[in-house]
Length: 404
Image (cartoon, rainbow, N blue to C red; front, side, top):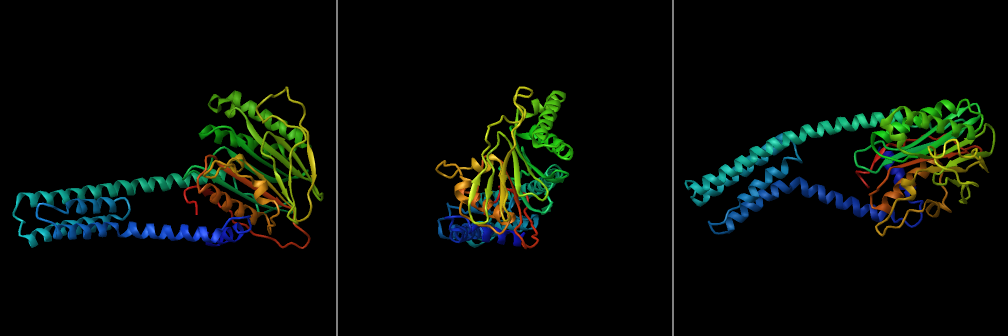
């Protein structure tokens, strides 16, 4: 993970106008200060309460500070630390009243009982938070396992092409949603799909499983991308009719189907209502791969739509194909401006697909300030130049919980 983040920072500097080092430096420094303050805050409150009680008339008391210390420690520290914080706060109350000679008064006994009671509640809160944290960690593990089962990470080299993929969930602690991608080698060459199911929740996840299952099976047998698109269309319609819980498989699914024939410098695409892929040339030139004829997404107009048109483009050595979902193109900055992947990447050169995705993920986080309203799936496929060495890749599933 440390090596991955280092690559993210290095590749992120390749994107125009980012100021990565200064921004990260401030964010990292601010995060360290915040963590330090949180760690010492219970002790600070006890010291403040002690000083306040010493410097004010007897009618004033520092018990609010002493009560707050174990409550703050409860959700942040271990049971032992919470207990020691409550014990220190209670001892501080006893010492102060002994110093003032007021330990025999009813008010003093009430103050001590209050602090002790709050400390006991803090221990209970600590246990509840600890149990909830374990349950959350278990849920995260299950979600990540489900993500890997439904969206397994592609191999880093398939059919002579370099491949990198990443999936970022908009919601913190989420690992899977309605975005999908797949790459596989077939008798017709390397075929791939990137798509976005319209919808959220389990229905969208089920639809993703349907599309990917149909793609993996049909890609091996359908001779053309157009026929492959029709197979996916029929699979969605069949599942939507068979299972009411899918709500007609969330209405529709946008996708791009791609094919790179064996030993060919040609790239073929069928676009069904999806954001247009980008082709990055080794000299920094960027081509937006817009379809010649706009087509409806999968799940709309079955039987009435004309046969899918397959568009072809040259795929030069050293070039990289980037496919993405609208979580990228519809990401917004603080002023509400949409992220423009073509504008941000045009003129940039990356060593390979992995570096491209690392830079792009880092740039989007900075652009949005770490926030997002939609999931984002990225798939990059590079046609290696002659003599280009084998590359290894580690692109994790990323949650939006940490924008740095």
